[in-house]
Length: 493
Image (tube, rainbow, N blue to C red; front, side, top):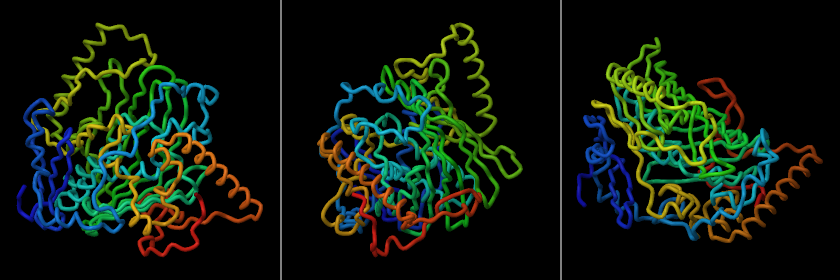
């Protein structure tokens, strides 16, 4: 593959046994500043032209990526050491039947229901589509920037599709770092509170184009047939070249069919993205599944100016893609769609409100694209071995990889050094269970000792404070992590 060194974006797509690598040099001033215009009705027909966003390769960057990165990884792995265990012989109901209405963070779950990642690592999957932030930074128009930010916010939850395994609860003081020079960012996160469980993170662009930070308190509850995760906490994105700050909160995630049937996931609720400099907002609605599965995975909304005048419409599926389209076209399409829905409701019985034993299939399996739409984001296909690897994406597959060079650099509190997560990744389920129990007991003993001595826990890399843009409670990065001066760290493993 050959191309100009002026190219900008980068994406790696793995298709079955062959890998196509599209690299675009992030150091160039030339960029793709427009979006693809869609004139057909199907997502499949738009794939060829949308690939032009990332279809250039820089030989210089490719050679650079073969060098050792700052955290020791030269080439990322494409699978886990061992495939996942079957959960067919285990009943979640046997654990949860006494916990209806309780907060699940206080319930000890068997390790078989976990996936081999800490929640801090799972949180890092927000960064999989960082190219959308880089792209937003290069756009001169604030509405076009908001479109990219909205696409990034939606893409941040896309990896949760079919990820029914529970991440390990982080230990108090646990940390995680990720450096991705190929994607142009580095991230640090810390578990800053255990009860309630709060995870704080801070990411920055390696080209000093953005800062992305937040604190997440996932409030989990069991409601008989489903587990609901309500993400408390503020997420903030700063585009430094434009002196803009955007804030939002994520939608609610729900795992259905806990007792019987195939587990399936949906996201629902409202997401309000605010540009605190211009006053523009993006109002997105993640629709609940709805009757006959018609609304499954759908996202719809608008971008409005500071006077609340609607500027354009956004729509798509959080599992697949996001489009923008002008208001007149969108309203006409939605009016016609609503008419068809009402006709179908009149022809079908609607009295049963029970959850289905199987995941409902949407009436339009592929995304129905409105003519004249512009593609903002499209998900990359998962690796061919994903179903045997906890349904991990290519990005998730590398989050727990570790070699000797990296081990000599990261602090002893990093997730990669957790023995229970490491054992589960290696297929040692009994060892993982024993280590998980040992770590939980060690954490309880440490908390008991602190209470006796009236000693307060001190976070290392974050401190409490108001969010500078919303004024709400937040955790602010204290700095100095990347100095690699790791002294007086807690012994948590």
